[in-house]
Length: 299
Image (cartoon, rainbow, N blue to C red; front, top):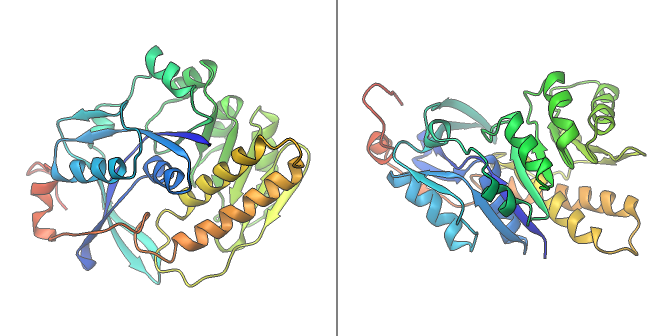
């Protein structure tokens, strides 16, 4: 059984005009999907003492995800105000003063010992872990998967890649496929074992230092693209790590098959609403109350 730990953000995606809110967040989503796909999953996040924080905690807890190393703090849960345009997510507003921002993980020795028990530890550009904290985890023996998301810079790649086992880049904004391949080569050359670029409707490309692997997009009618990248990453890792123990399986097949399974799973996820398909009705007039929002903060 694959053991996966997500360290980062749990947030509530609030679809204001639909009167619905959906639990989400990069590492939150990955941990949930890992459990749903049969893995042993855990999440290290910071939960607020507001109504949304309780929902975020309970959603993972009911899925059987280990939350023993998460923190509970006074403050406001992370949230994003979202609208859908032809099935694509559009972020209207979000807060930058949630409990994860105000009470970030320090990454203690005890947390490093805990993290290195897992086959992979997932975090991201949005996970609120600094380079030094990622470095501490990696040097302590944890196997790191890092999602650079779509705002990555060459400096990000150069500083983080040496400490990664898996690196994912959202590259749908990069038009030149050769440029994408060069980025993947750079990530791996710097020390990352496998680098993957997702390109939205153009599929994905992986590189392992020896060859490139191409996966086309699985065409479906998307209802909501929220969390598509997280589901892709999770399914790739779960498939690759479960196949890794099979010495009779060729490495090329492991990567190719994992890309295909990831594309299939992401295609399934985008046909549901929200990142996880779990939603709660919300009265937008109650948002300040359920999120512990101070009067100076506007929604």
